[in-house]
Image 1: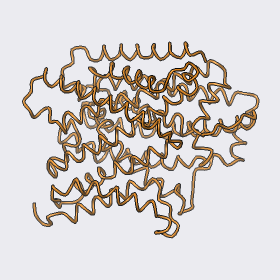
Image 2: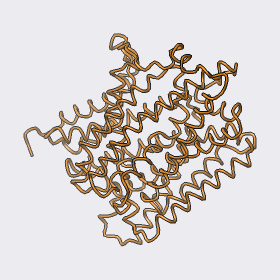
Image 3: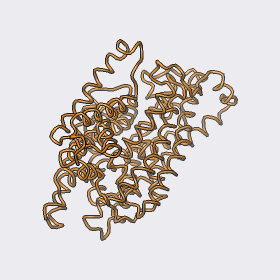
Image 4: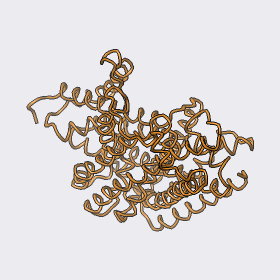
Length: 481
């Protein structure tokens, strides 16, 4: 693909996003940045959440994951869907009842200021790492297959993309993100479906369904209890990953809470959970088709499985499909960054700085918020550079590893607050939340020796949450209000 054409596509896409930002932010006050004035349409939020949840990691890594694990990833996705119903039934009503803008305000009401800031800090760390690794995946593909040939360094590519994202998110906030995510989801799904239609329509793939059944790549269930992809382990991990990474995540909840009523927000979440099952099945099907196509066309396997989809799309498929792939890839990039950047700005301003409790006027609040926004963008850039220099090959596993260790304390805090009546000693809460992931890290490192060959996988999240709850209980003033 011509580098000039690629750059034109990126620039044109950016202009569209700027136009949406300008239109949605007209006449908006400072409060609108955080809440969208509670005017978001539930079905628009539901559709846009697909792009936010899938991101570049799903777009690139899930098809590549099929070669090693078949369709066992769907066990995790099934757990995700159950988790969304739990979030809709338990957490959304709680947040609406308390009229929260930042969901970590619950921790302040339930425990106190130390727990409140600890929860917000873990979210900021989690989202910084998770969002930037998603951005890195997409930037790395564009760099590897297009921009390296032009002599453009990765550092410059990342800096320019972050500048684009800052320009269209600095003013609009949540209201802008809801609509840009919807547009980006549309393009991402178009690239997915278009690629599947092309592959299954080639003469070499006439019997693709029977071939996939025969080679076992469509296998979903893993019934080996010692495996890190064991069915029960994956479903439970999926449920709690969703509760933590969606229900306890300011980015995801900020968009849901911009819907006017709790019933509308519940409807959004439940509708989205069903759509997510079908979309992930399509990505897994795409992975199976890509590997079968490579085998039948005698195409050499790339060094990393994450490179299979981009290598075929940009080097072996027709130019129009490569163009569709690039558009889908760019659409996977921006939702990973814009919503996270907005949510991190909101959480830092509201939870850590206390921007609404200082008696500042709107002009002063806006000035502080914009400085925080720019600071967060700089942190994003530094994290992206780190992942580039680290050269992590197994992106989707790395992403969930990060989630397990950083969202685990959040899950433990909220679960303890909702289901236990005890009050932990506030000064101990930050230490407990730091100790739990450290202990879990060493347990996972030696799990096969300690637990008779059992290999700890994505359920790290549950272990961290459990240890956090145990620590909170041990430090509680039992029987006292």
